[in-house]
Length: 109
Image 1 (tube, helix red, strand yellow):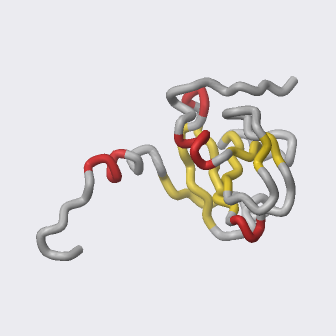
Image 2 (cartoon, rainbow, N blue to C red; image 1 turned 180 degrees about the vertical axis):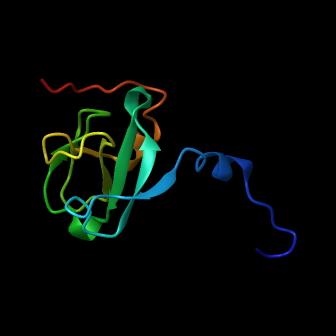
Image 3 (cartoon, rainbow, N blue to C red; image 1 turned 90 degrees about the horizontal axis):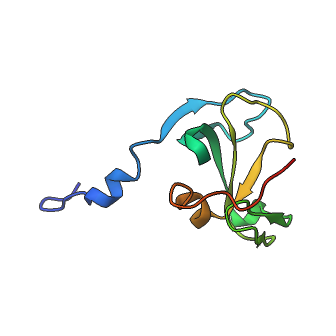
C-alpha cells in the first residue's frame, strides 16, 4: 500500500461476511467460490460469471428482470444444498449486493 493511503472503511466493511472455502469438485469448475450470507441469512456459495462466459439468458430473483446473454453476473446456491441446476440462482451483481435491504421478488415452487 502506498504511503499516506488508507483503506476506505466502506470498502473493507463489504468484505466482512465473505469467506473463501473450497467447493466440492463436481460443482466447482474454476477453483474456489466465495461463501456469503444470502437471502434470509443462509450462507450461499457464490461464483462470479464473466461476460465472456455468460451465453444464456437468466431471470434474476432479486428484481425479476432478465439477465441478458453477455452480461457479467453471479451464481449463488445454498451452502447446505450441493444440488444441481434446481437450486442455483443467477443474480445481477447489483441485486445480489442489495439482497439484505430488499427481499427476493421471485419464488420457485
